[in-house]
Amino acid sequence: MQQNTTHLSFQDLNLNTPLYNALEDLGFTTPTPIQDQAFNIVASGRDVVGIAQTGTGKTFAYMLPILKHLKYSKQENPRVLILVPTRELVVQVVDEIKKLSKYINNRVLGVYGGTNINTQKQAIAEGLDILVATPGRLYDLALSRVLQLKSIQKLVIDEVDVMLDLGFRHQLINIFDLLPERRQNIMFSATMTQDVDVLITDFFRNPERISIAVSGTPLENISQQRFEVPNFYTKVNLLVHLLRDTEHYHRVLIFVAYKRMADRLFDQLDVFFKEELCVIHSNKTQNYRLRSIEQFKEGVNRILIATDVMARGLDIDNVSHVINFDTPEYPENYMHRIGRTGRAERKGEALVFSTQKEAEAINGIEELMHMEIPVMALPEVVEISTELIEEERPQIKERNNPTKRRDEDAPGPAFHEKKEKNQKENLGGSYRREIAKKYKKPKTKGDKNYNKRNKRK
Image (cartoon, rainbow, N blue to C red; front, side, top):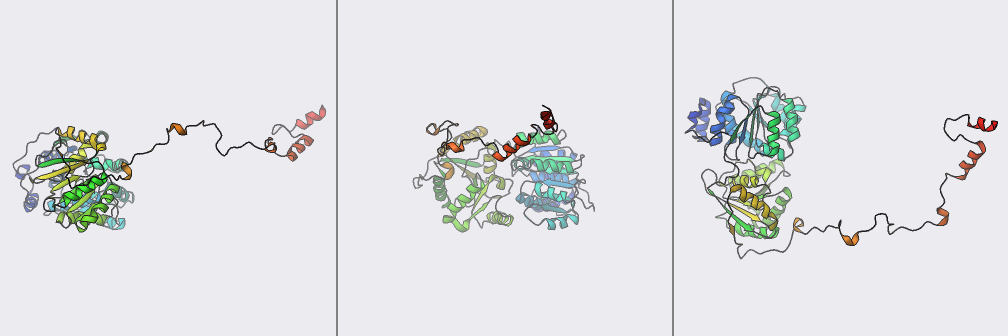
């Protein structure tokens, strides 16, 4: 593991003039720990695995050394492939690369599903140097033969843990088969899971590992609070009460467990906040999601409801509060969520609503952080609801009900004895039996001498 020894400035990284000019335009002078530690390793051409939380500057960490050594070329096929899990991240990474490439003559393209593939084929045919893609659309383009991947020199897989969560493992393996064996592999993940480790073991060559800001370490500039609530509708009542303080809760990111919950919560809050509210999850259209994110960034919408996968890797500044409407099942996801606030030296606040069923998840989060989240009393004005949503209602299991147990071989309620005339064995009809007696048909098929033997007797 690399140790955290931050350089004083980007000048110590020995970049070239075009990159220094771009960084100066962006106002960046000091590299983040992941940028500092990854630069020389990525530049050396070795395989790299970086473990760093979202928002630590991972895109620049791999792009600075890549752009420094990416020479001008007129070849049509891409030399750098960057795989990310969602369309939103494609847009974001392309935007970051273009900022760094302001004074460099290179061609960057982002491709993802949900849009016209023929338009993307035309863009690829015009030639490019760096391709940013989601696995599904990349594989479709590769199979169409318009995209040749044998020219790839560097493969970057960003947010690989999310990619595996979304079920992209088989597509990644298929893509690896299309790539040249001699290439540099660069992988970034916010968490190290068993699936990620298996992928590294199978496809990486003695990678150098870098670990920055272990996911269990809470950020010092984020204050955390917890509310114990009995059910969904009480959570809604508490949330409405808090969000009415528009001055304090001026840019709020609300996390929910899954897509249906996102829509359900949106419907509840829309009654109160209407134009202040937007939502993103994978069932929403591409344009809707991009518009929601943009409006939230610009302050047009004050409240954004999101699922974990959609919000991972999104670079949204000045988020005043992260509210965990659902307690995340995996403690690492809690760390990613609260990392959306308290960025760039600003103070941030994180709240979590937990039910009795979510107590075990809370224990896991607190164990990971080595600290307890302070529990706050519910405001007296918040109504405690007794209404339950479908997932909260007790499930009645009939399978093991002893009062309904019966002999499996016993006749059912519709059973009755056959009448005597219907109890006779069906022998195939009297005509067939009479003909068989008269002509003494062979008992076994093919025994043509059966009749002759009987006549001699």
